[in-house]
Image (cartoon, rainbow, N blue to C red; front, side, top):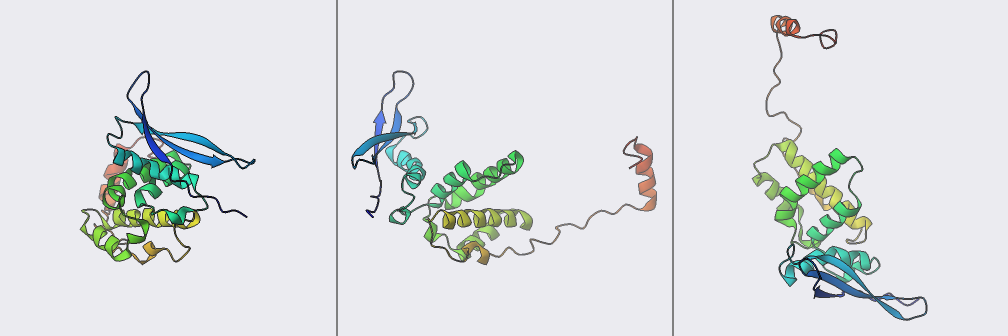
Length: 203
């Protein structure tokens, strides 16, 4: 069986009748009769990606979907993996999906987005998490999100199947409370109860 050729594609800047120019990724796709057909995918406008370098980075996640059988021929960045995860694999619950996207874009992408997956090392991630001015529980959430990303990378064939490297990342005191909970005395509880109306009072 003939192996599918890796599709790097070519990036072109195309003018539009209305609005700013756009970046388009063009690639060839094999047909059943043995011929090749030229296709194009919109990457984004020049307002969004002002340079060709920025447009190529944005096109990286598109190239992953064009080459499901040849992903190891391309150095995949964590940013491209993150984009594909957001596009294809977020939780269905909207509130959870928004939470994931916000934390990934605020913390993970700025630090690790440009790194190839193979260069995101557990010890480096652990030291980075230590430096963040966040509660241990929040750091644990970020580690869990990165664990999810690496599971996706292995499932999609972007990494060899192995023990998830993020399993080695430790977050100290992530299960401990930062402050002891405030416990009401019996008198304080009665005072609170007098301020409540039904159905809260009955509850």
